[in-house]
Image (tube, rainbow, N blue to C red; front, side, top):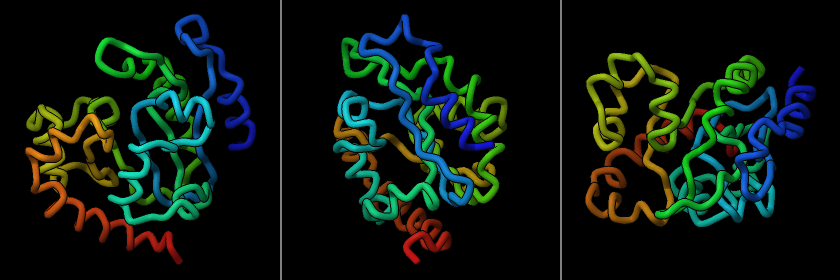
Length: 197
């Protein structure tokens, strides 16, 4: 039962000793969702508000997808499951990596409760490495740039994206093909889901 699973996740204390701001799992789930977004982990603003992608990264992601907030935050259309559910804290050069306990503990149970998913966005290296582990695609495309550029070779139902963080502006500037070639194809895939309808 998805409701029970969501309650268990929201009450999770698994990483409490390692979370400087305490646990606050941030997810968005409903059985009817057709799009699943798997990112890294909440940032401090998302931790404070409890709203996924409620920051500049989220603004850019919604722009990439051409989805407004009313659609993006409708759990019956879009499921949001980060690799780490809680804000991991600050490191020397930005936020720390997602806690490694979340995905193996919760993700398979979540995916089993999302039967309508048609497209899964793997955002950033953590989700891509986890979900494509052992695949020939990952073995032959070792960098995030190579994976995003060759997303068409990736197994369905995955679509690969860089992280939309403002910190990634240098990557976006160096890889103009992403906005000119990849984003239009992504938007076609999103349109096929009829989320705006």
